[in-house]
Length: 563
Image 1 (tube, one colour):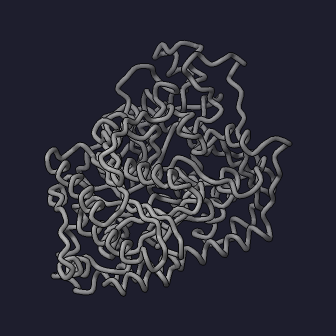
Image 2: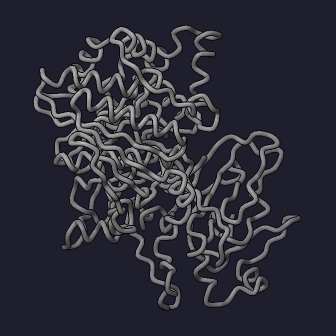
């Protein structure tokens, strides 16, 4: 197995002479094997290796046992080790995340911080994903609606910003090979009791593979991995084709004089630093020998969800595109000069196959923001839909962007919208210039008897009833909703009847198809778009900025993305 892992490392150029490596070591079989392989290559390649163990504070004495085991193992192998104590449960509750997702985010933060202690640029973070993990990732992404990039699974290496790189040296070996290797070398490891529960999505998917292998095909994992490789090739092909078309027809209007940093700040996108968002995390370190350091970490300073239902966006642990995104989603690189807007002829976009048109739409957004994080296939569809519409039509996009049809062109540009009436926004309320950033979308099949969320800020709509381009905006003359029985009521009349203060009416967000309003956010939805027994596909809209944009008060759903 060691030779197989070394061959994989060489094939994908994961390690070079003199590399500095931070290894994530949980104490489980995979991570113990990973550290042993790195230590085995340390002298040959002149590697500088450190280990990081994250104590999640969830499993009591068992977690204490794992931390002590890793510390002892690292000391025996002369590997500097840092144990990080993280409040996963508190961070999950405070940020509307599952404990599984919160733990993953905190682990990557701890690894990144250790990489920065080693100098940052050029440091590699090694994680112990193996073949079955790859198969599980591909299945997970398939089940949650990912497109080609997600279905390609995890790449052997992935760039993070700051010149740090994630590597997966064991991705070419199986779980069984790892166990055999540990037994042959007399290496012990810790068993995590939570791996046997059905509390986490990953565990539930993990249980499927043995069944599929036994009842369907013994080579199922290998076939899943082969399919993932083909998906990666297809994704690379469409990226290349989109780049070729963009090179020929794309138009970029450069931003006015000003720094790229100023431009990024105006976008209010994921480029905000952790320090700006909520200050640096407090840590309390204690020394436990020259090779071992422990610290307490209260959690990430900013929560950014995984992409879900994306067309070609980066997802943590998945193959990245042109821009580099940290696994915790904190920032992205602007690899080109900032643009004021970019566009493509509507005829060119409209004449492409649907999948390629989607890649072009994503390319325009990425050109404006440096990333397609939190951009879904729905946003791409909205941009492409403008090719079938007349001049003047537009749709709102995240990060303060909008897509506009202007005569023969479709533009993606910054949406600098002033407050209605020129009034200043109230303290604590953002201006409505970036309304789309307040709502995230996902799409999935509707199963009969599925419980519809009874939540003011998460709504389901019958996707097949939506025929045009959706927009997230404030009210306009002519807006209406459909009531029971099919009658219409103007949004203006509805707001008057609900006794909504006049000064608040131009602040409330609407999700609309033309003048037909699907959702007055925080209040009610149109009867026309409601889910029925005949519904086949759901469009879920989730407003995570409810206090700022809709009805005041607590109790809004703070979850982000689709579950």
